[in-house]
Image (cartoon, rainbow, N blue to C red; front, side, top):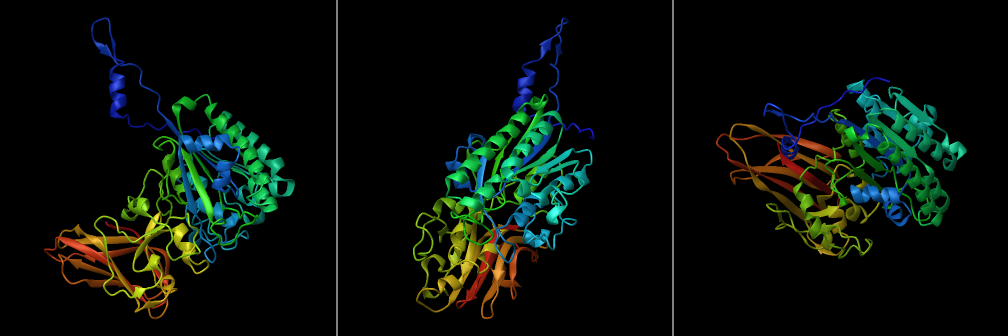
Length: 509
């Protein structure tokens, strides 16, 4: 295997002070520094557990996973649904591996038809392309992950070592222990910088017995033992004390209580990311993490650029103003199809923002009267399979104008609401770029406009959406007039029982 480069790390001020305290006096009365600490090697391990439901992991006898959660971060998240992709393993593991959503990597189901892995390679291959000296490893017993069978491989032949077993043919209860043993040996006695290890038995138990069954809990317990064996191998490495490991555990999709996945129910769309490593607060919970962040986090940790990915490294949160509203989220009022315990919407804007409902009709569904702020879990439960599940590039809390849902209760007038940003300082004569994530579903009769005003002047339209813009990042160049000192942005949506518009992560760069 190629040799692994040693990366120096910056020494924090506290560490400098500590080192200063270890300075030894020489016989002549001078000072000599203690030996410098060895440089740290950054290493990452991603563990995949197929079809695992987070709530059932918490209910199972899973001490290793629970220890990771207590010592690191837990982040529940939701998937897409058709027509972007089914909630199946092919799209799920491709999303995790590549760090981009199915509308880029092209895998919509387990046929792998339309895959774009040459353009969007797995994170191990991307690491090899960026730095061939990095040592990479993948082990899995679902064939498309690490072997060329059944439409794969997701992880390409550029990976230094791939172990692919046929768990679906021989039984994951037989092959998962082999994967655990082989991976443990490789991690303890080899020197991989970036690794992916997969276990499939939980998914089989979900299909055979349902996620609500004892058999499903038992499968989680056995998989947890495999994970423990792999984690023990990492800490047993002779050089572990000189290494900086980041561990991530994730899943490709959820399961219904009765068993099965592939559809658009909240249970099938359920995923999670568990992460432990330097800089990750113990016992923390986050709601702004998506599956695409796994690859981005792994790559950044071993020094590989993440340009072009949909994922964001875990240590680079966006700081989106809408996410500050999570403590203010409320339960349902009129949306009786949403379970009572699900808190996921508010009409209270974040600091500096406002909503102008002066042209808004009266009545309608309370939750969606004018621009609201909601979570994926809350909003998509209002009505499945109408495109709301495709809003994958929004994170945590986002702004939503939904004339379709608002009109489901008696009302007068039409939906006409404007979301207004704070005033941001600008310099006249420059060009600034307005960036935001958006998910817009068009229908004749509705309008969606972005307007800007300078120094309190009349708002001017800089963008009108006249066709679908589903889960698309936006970048609008604003030419700041000479002498202008501030700019304010407005998002105006008007419709009459039409579709919807979401906006998130608005920033002026």
